Image (cartoon, rainbow over all chains, first blue to last red; front, top):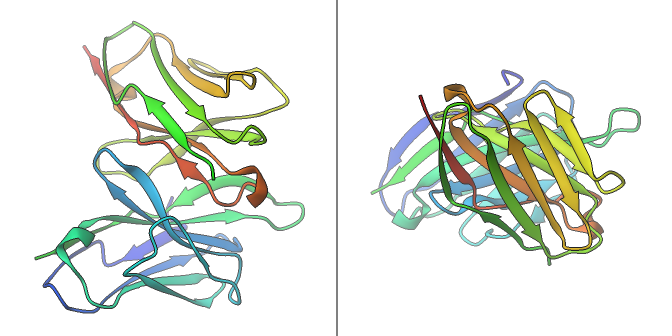
Length: 116
Length: 114
């Protein structure tokens, strides 16, 4: 879905470096999420946000932080990257606005992160 | 909290055969059950979903069935085609999150052999 974009699409970094992954959406959705995908483990929720004033931890938030700079932007940071954070990261959105509400999640294209 | 288990992890079928993927959940009050398909190198996309007030929903060759008593729901794909080859994820949001905090199964990799 071209309405949810992620940058960068691929990133290789070294242990200890600070990394930021960015997500933008033009769908007008209020809810945004960050997931991590590892083989055999499915999609695991890192953080989620209702709106710019709301940030919530998901299943695996340790080692990560997020920022909701605007309704359309949700960034994920790795303060000090480690090799076991090597994974595919997805941003997603959903809509809870009255009259538009849907539980469907719309995913971005993903960011493949490798930590050496 | 909600726990979602998905089986099998890998499924191989011959083109034209049916495929069934099953998921169980732990929160008896969960009321929304989506299925997502992720093609190789692509993002997950919703293919079908069901709410707890119905037992079955169909959309062309795919269908989802729900057994609330047993707390499981299944994806059925009939007349499989090579383009059905993908990873399929079930999901269930915990009932106390209003459908917001979705918990995904580990995924099933489906291979359809031509």
